[in-house]
Length: 462
Image: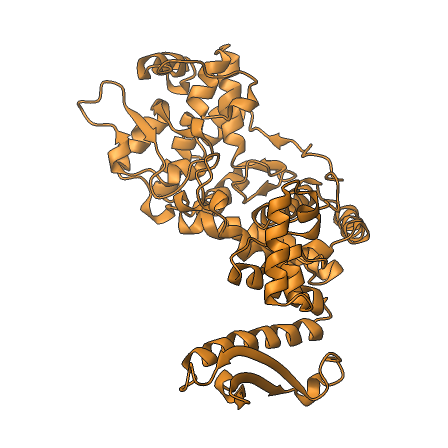
């Protein structure tokens, strides 16, 4: 790629930018005949070696190449370019960029007069000065759909979110999953409507994407949870960028057209867990460490990701531990919710399994899906032939999956009529799942939890 300084020329005592329009751009770039020309507004006598001018030319050249890329991609290049230049010019003049609607609605006359006086001083006939000081008329966010995820993930509200802990609290694997979900949503949207400026998305575009996804759901006989989540994250990302840049955003979807998840995650029956999974010899050929991991899932009701990320300081199974238990904490990664941070007593097969694995399962840390695949190989052999099991550790997966053991654990608590707050305390549920808050104070003691869990211990029942 040619160096931008090649386009730096001296003319009448001033430094200027001058670049020939490439032959392949000649038909597209109707705004320039043969050359793109721009003034740096830097005198040669003030910058004899062209150091400052070279920096200015680099900026102008980057804008020019961006303009050409937009033309090739069929985007509204003029709107995007004018918006960017307007924002930069406003900053150079010491003003915050605002749309013409925002300036017109500002009731402070002195503020408007200050802008007008500045415009007269710097050049009232320059359209970029007009946009910078009196508000742009072009509707462009300067953010394409293809740039949306990168822009979104840099937002402070995403980096430091109080609700989820923010990206800074996530592990590399969690961040990768977070990004992949959003990139997939945008990728599917671009495939249907093209790589548009986020403010250029119309109701017709939204309807086109919705219609395509509806056909996809019907043809592939899948649930509506996927498309609903994809549209949700697209709307949220666009809304967040517009809030950052103080842009007026008209939501093209208005509301999500797809219903919330209505599939059923199947629990394994209590009898199947007790009499088949835990039957003597049923899993003898299974790798011992994988079998122990399964046993801990059965008798703690914890999420697979929580058990996979246990490590020695949070496993209390020594002789000085009156009540053996595990402490689920956000070490190097985020937990699902605030309530997921909890202590869980060890009973039945989980107790001996944890004693055999006091440092947890290092091979599966931050990789619960790998553990799920290994364990499911064996569970599939125990299930009836007509029952399929998913390798997903996603609690929103429909049908039968390893997460079903968590539902079985809850059924065991229901069977002894455990109170709702105790279920939340043991399973780390979101408060919204029960409709009741855990209340004030320190919560349930480990002794109180153990007393309840002792009543569902299969080994004691035997």
